[in-house]
Amino acid sequence: MAIPADGGLTPADIASQTDLIIANLTEALKALEASPHDIAQIRIYVVDMTPVEVETVMGKMGEFLSGAKPSLTGIGVSALASPEFLLEIEMVVQLADRSAD
Image (cartoon, rainbow, N blue to C red; front, side):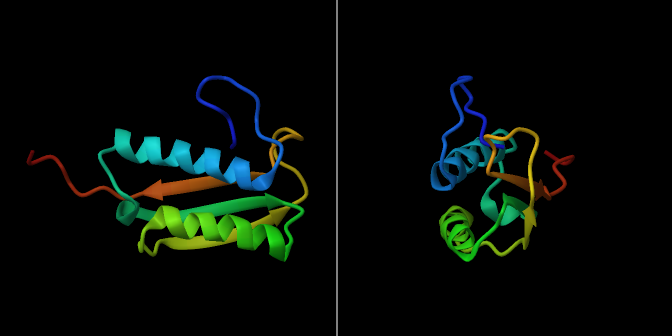
């Protein structure tokens, strides 16, 4: 969800919320020492999804994925956990076995 790390306000538009979520996903990948190529699956939930919103979100996701091609599903929903959230993105990452490290 578009929750700023500093506890600030959630942006009001879908493009800004997408940017914020992608920044959060990027930080999660860094914490895992992973890259977009380690992402196995992404689910994107968009409130009242329209083609314009899909184009906005998918354009930004394409840049984030940097050529990686995980399973990706877009799902239109009527609402999320709070009225200010316009989208939510779930990411499943598959890491290589690091037990030998």
